[in-house]
Length: 203
Image (tube, rainbow, N blue to C red):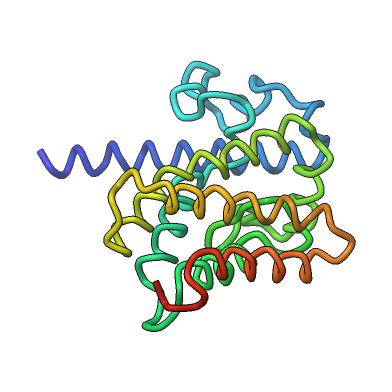
């Protein structure tokens, strides 16, 4: 039973990757709004029905590594070095993952598997539907991050301070991006979170 199951999972992963790769190539070449889902399905040699079995909406085709974001956020908290506080660990991860000049969340390796990461970021930031989807996707992981913070600090699962830190840390890149000096803004935001969290106690 294991072998057939393994083959099915590999086939599903290959189809999903083919769809995401085809979508990214078409979107970057012609523009997101100028490409329909049927064109993406045709390019990947699958039906539109199959496409929607793998992706719930057109926007999701652009962000096919959504689950990696959550895993990386949780790992940033759980795998932080001794003596590194939760806000410090989140700052290091979020500034690295998002960057001071982009709103586009990227797990290790980035969403843009091809040679056009700058074009990918530009496409998302210049397309309202993608920009909004990216922000909603980023904030969806607030609950998982808050739970990880609570587990690491011994707080109750529904601890308000952990939930607040998760919310403000995830929103920090968006706030920083609007500032004339995003890097300095990010530093100031996380310094404020650090002071509120415990003044660098390593909590």
